[in-house]
Length: 365
Image 1: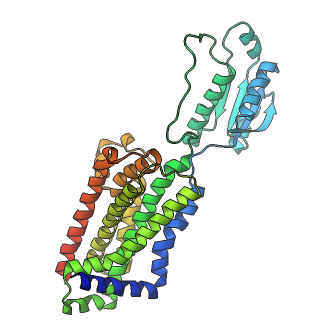
Image 2: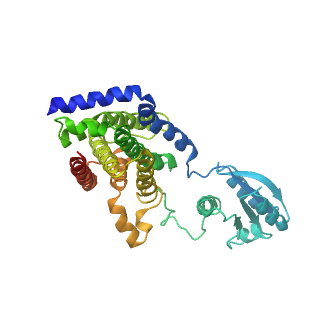
Image 3: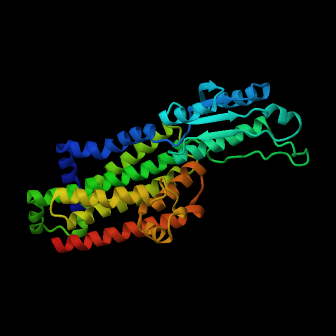
């Protein structure tokens, strides 16, 4: 059995060497996509275009302005004394935020009263506006702290674990790895098996003594090797180029990734048993992996904020479990006591799809 399985795997390796485009796509495409999305996809807010309308012309007003400019988040694009300039600046996009220092701001501070400031934001990008508002509150708290605080009740000092500088790359790149590996692995495997049907070689397998399990293992083994190499390259790229740390065990990372890839390979083979053409296999593979992995895995949108019905659907998305385990191992250095349930879910999914794919293969042979 092992000899026949290795013979099928060797034949598939030879086929991949001849069809080098497929091998290159499976091996190199994940890293290329990681490079593109890694640089292009970011939630970090920097260089926000700021206009300052100073109606007070005081030293206190200049201190507030300098605090915003020197924070590193804002770029001063215009300074004026007419609040009517705000609308044209925001409408044209020349400014994304406008800080208004009203007349009497310094006088209010001198008498112990709170100084009122106004921050006008472009809310067409709600996520950017929310982030800018949070930055502005931090800056204002440092410039004009609440005078009611006492030594017995000092202001809180935030402490951020695992990602101290709140770099979005460290949050997004593990999700990108899961997304890219799932899509490319399923599509490549599905197309490889369906190609056998279109060429007629699948029919000739019926005359061989190969069993369904031997055929299934032999066909998927080369793609498992390539997918594992692509996963290792993608994670190394994330670590070396984007400074994503690896705080946990490399062995556990390899085991979790292997289960995830086995599930993807099984899903690709299952699709190939249902589709009769490469076009149909590509469409089904793309539709069943891209949207669920992108939208329902917690990659970008938190699952806890989704409606209950959608949260129930996310339980059949394998990337949901891989992403929890991957972030736990890479960013937090946690062990199976934390994400063991996710690893079990990946194993159940891989076993289920491989069993169904094997049963379908038996029927086709």
